[in-house]
Image (tube, rainbow, N blue to C red; front, side, top):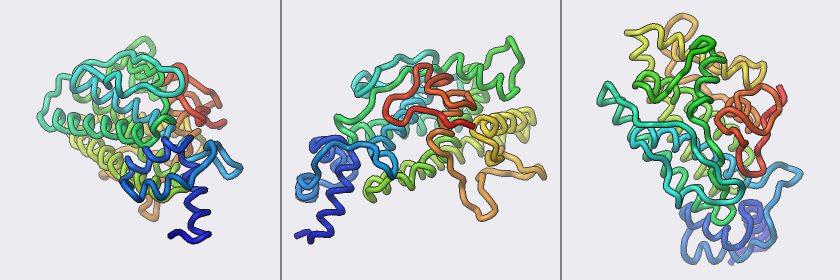
Length: 315
């Protein structure tokens, strides 16, 4: 039997985490709390979740993450299969958008192909998990651009010149550079979101996804470093992309390439304490929208993302 304090704590945590009783039950089931545990907790929650004076609801934070997972899943799935998410994996609240661009990559190495397949499976699973957890509170896949947005990003980074195009699906090296744009951002996004999540069950789930995204980022950085040792232009391109992300998300110089200033390997980007850095949701959207200003759409999300968290930071 819950005592008065525990009842209050659980009621507040659950009511902040999704939008109705059915959604809360689904969220807990997807997060691993089933049976009597779900029934005993879900009945305590009442009301509609909304942003509070202390920040956004847990549902809003995880829906923001779902938008990013849609982007990553579509990128990787199209690169390895030629097709994106199924119709059953993209519906929800907000405007359902299409996907522009993406096609199977001709991988030159078996290792690159196997890595891409594994990451694609993980990203699809992340979409399924978050959608199941959010239930009826989940947002739909927004409009995604995997074509012009990459060219705009590469042009802004100085990887290509005016009038040229960058196609991340053209070959294995281009694919890896395209993946590099996303993966580090995903890690910093989840770390930045962690303090906003109030419910520890949901925080643990988000930490699990963060760990997987960090594995993905290290895989991409490791392969790029190896290739860069044979073709230095690759390491130069990675450094330019890193600098471009830094120029978009604010004045702090936090982002790091795959080699340090001394030319040594830099697989894991950390600070002096060996810690990964964080980005706010607004900073993440600065990069996703390819705009350092405060806007609500652009870049990889031409019509913006769905959900309450949808505006980039004012830098």
